View 1 (cartoon, rainbow, N blue to C red):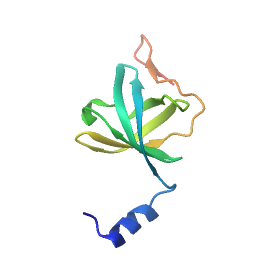
View 2: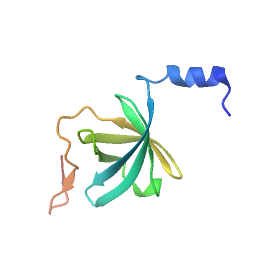
View 3: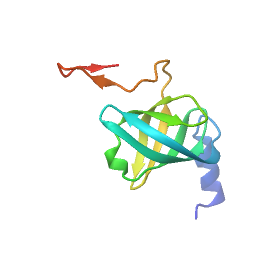
View 4: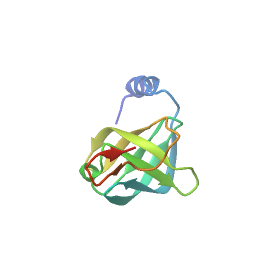
Length: 105
């Protein structure tokens, strides 16, 4: 259990207040997709339950049933959890690799 004073300091480092939720979502990237559960959510990021955190790339698109797709960047990883920050991009399509091997944004 985290001491109350330590928990308060952790919250102070966040840019936005996170809300506890339990939403079904899909992580989409150029080589596939994985189902996940969104455990908490803010305007700037989320905490995700995933089957295998190491199988998820550094950047991907998160699609929730009730929201627009969001580009995400992984901030931290644990065994079955990811902490992600939402990228401030208008284009929410996953990056794709062209035939020449160049990544198209």
